[in-house]
Every structure is written in C-alpha cells, then in structure tokens.
Image 1 (tube, rainbow, N blue to C red):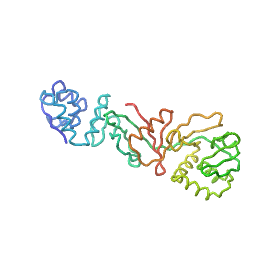
Image 2: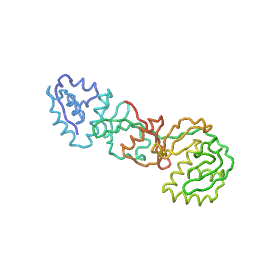
Image 3: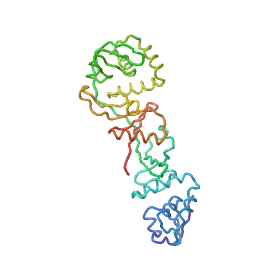
Image 4: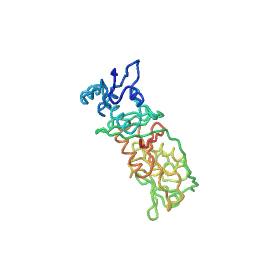
Length: 302
C-alpha cells in the first residue's frame, strides 16, 4: 500500500526526497510507503501541497496494516541514526539489511540460520536494539593425554581421587583430595577409555538420562565441543548449558572462557537479548545449539 504524493513538498521538495532515498519516482509523481509518510509527518515535514499532515491521522492510517508498526519504529530509529534504508517487504534495506521483530516474538533459529540480515528488536516502548547472527564453526587448541584413572558413581555425579584430571586438564571441580565430575564429563571420559568406573557405560548413560531429561542432547553438544578441541565447563552461573575455553594449560592459570552455549531451537527475542547481554557483560560470545548446528549472536551498534 502506497500513497501518491504530487506537487511541491514544502522545504523538502521531490528531488530532495529522492536524494534522501525516500519514495519512488513514477513520472511526475513520488510514491511513498505509508511508513515513509508517517516518518516524515512525525518529523514535521510538509509532504503534501505545502501542508503538514496530521500526525495522529497519518499514524492511524499507517498502522491499519499491523506489519507497518515494527517497520515504522525500526525505520524511524535507523533514519534518525543516519541510515538511509528503504522498505522492501518486511525488511529495511540499505548498506545493511534489517529485519524488525517484536521483543515478544519467538525467533526460530532454523528459519534465520544463514540469512544475511541484522535483527532489529523493537521493545514495548519503541526502542530498537540490533543483533547480528551467523553460523559458527570454530575449533579450540586443547591437547589432552589423560592416563586411565578410577572413579565412583555418586547418584548424579562422579567422584575420583585423581586430581591431575582437574589440575592439568580442568575436568570437574577439586576439593581436598577428590575431584567431582559432571555426568557429561564422566560419560565422555568413560567412552574415551580414560576412566574406569564402578558402572558399565550403558548403565551410566541410563542413570544420567534418568537424572537429566535432556542429557542425550547435552552430551551430544558436549562431545562435539570436546571433539573440536575446546575445554568445556558448566554454564550454570550464566544461565547457559556450557561455557567454553579455547585452551587451559593448568587449573592455576585459567583464562577467560570465550563462549557461552545454550541448547535452544527457538527463543523469544526478549530472552535472546538477555542471553546476549549476559555474554557481552562477561566478555564472551553467545552461541545457540540446535539440530547439530551453531548460531552466534552479537549485539551491534548502528
């Protein structure tokens, strides 16, 4: 839906509007998208026969199509920041491509995976925050030569007296003479033949799946990250499944982890924003794992 504007444009004439990337010229006419008309009206521009349009009437007309609401707030924000974007369906296109979404909207990672646009998340007050996303396929630098050791299954975790597995390779958590391993760590070490447990591997798997309903997916993720030569630890304190280090040489000199990873196929934009903010606050990047793929989100300044 577009409005046909003819004649002079007050201080912003037709040529000026076109030069500023507003509208499309059709003969002697300028065709403006309702969102463009609404933006110009809000800015107090004269866009019809040297007369200013009634702002509320224009907004009412523009928002009759609900798809225009998010487009308007993102368009206004980008234009106010000097970005000369044009409207193309549900996208705003300029130097970059932007896809406006509501903070209440659920984002499907499989649907946006590999798409070349920046998410423009519009909150309930009309403010806009921007997030880039991209497929992730990286590798760490950890090398491990673990000698076989003994351990004991303890309900929902595994305990060992082999402190070296913590001190040198950063598995588990050490306290006194023992190291406590998580179930995913224990399963990985058992499958690798590095840990001799008082349970068979399949018994350990059954116990782990009884304790954790999503153990299979968490272990799949953990194992993949380990096979990529990363050091992988719980992400509980950050609201994620894991935190990931590129390399740890010893437990006395642990660097900052570089990623937080959460298992999720979809997520509300507001929740996504919270995870990315937490990751950014602690100087990490936020990864989401779904269907054996990774997607990374970062907040960007426009």
